[in-house]
Image (cartoon, rainbow, N blue to C red; front, top):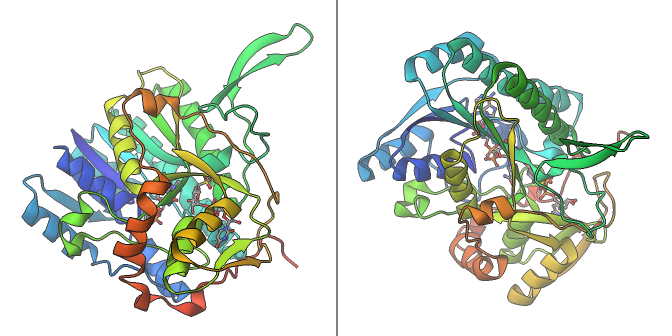
Length: 386
Ligand code: NAD
Ligand code: USQ
């Protein structure tokens, strides 16, 4: 299949491009390299020494019989160039990772808020527009987030995969609707806007769209990125882009106390990067039909309370735990159970936290700990403007 991976230089996009290439697909990566630019803006870096995109691709193309190509483009700003790209490459599927994905960065100030909205909404809408205008039969696989549901559930019922049944009015008419949106940051809000655009374009133009509501991704390497050291994936650890579990693993490696925000009563959903790439392959192989509503999968394999997660890592590594004033506006505690039966039924065999954590510490965080910029560990973005 011919597939464009938008955002294919990023943390999830790069290993996905390699995995899909390994599966025999013809891959074109499209990325504006904005993530690398933001590292420079924030004075931080990937913990792992990542190569530039040209070297990455040259290295892969030496190893693999299936070649990957790269096109540098800001898809939020250059609609006509994007449309021409669709016309010339004629993808049968696209995977859309190309959004600003950090909640703290999206809450930093008015310009990062506007940038996140402009970038994410326009990137998604331009892809939809281009498929309609070029009349290609192209399946969109989009990376959404568990955060669109919010964290208001009691844990008595699992979060359903995208849609909920409701009884309306005095006649108690049954309807199935998109799960109510309850975003916790400007970034998460853009993902709820994406959902509305997907619903509209499925209804109006019969586009085929799969939206993957992904949990927090942890880990670094996949079978493909391990094949050569120049293929290594990025690992974010700073206060804006570092996600909680990878941050804890990096902190344990440098003997820094694990930074729990608040008391750690927040429960979140997690998935290992090697399962991310497998889920995307499964989604590509199981597209919805034309005329269907967006197909939604919960792409998460386990849920954990942050205090339990910190204790687990502390037990394995002897790291200390610290409680930091929470810079975010979020409930101090919540329970969370997630229905992920669609992926399990399609054959996903999840990698659990218990089996992967120490491998990550030994092969990544201890190995590269000297690259940590200590100044970027604590969070600086605050949710409430004072
Ligand atoms: P990332 O920032 O590492 O990668 C995103 C890539 O998209 C970057 O390479 C960036 O340069 C590119 N990009 C951004 N805007 C672009 C534009 N306008 N034009 C072209 N390229 C553009 O992020 P990631 O962690 O790989 O996340 C990928 C997707 O998965 C995001 O949409 C994110 O919301 C979603 N997701 C990530 C996680 C996670 O824990 N990392 C969890 C759930 C969902
Ligand atoms: N947290 C800590 N200590 C830290 C960092 C974070 O306690 O050092 C807490 C936060 O307060 C929050 C939780 O950990 O309660 C998760 O924070 P995070 O930064 O790991 O994840 P989040 O902001 O939700 O965003 C990440 C990705 C985003 C993706 C989302 C999936 O950056 O792109 O959409 O995970 S989900 O959370 O399931 O919506």
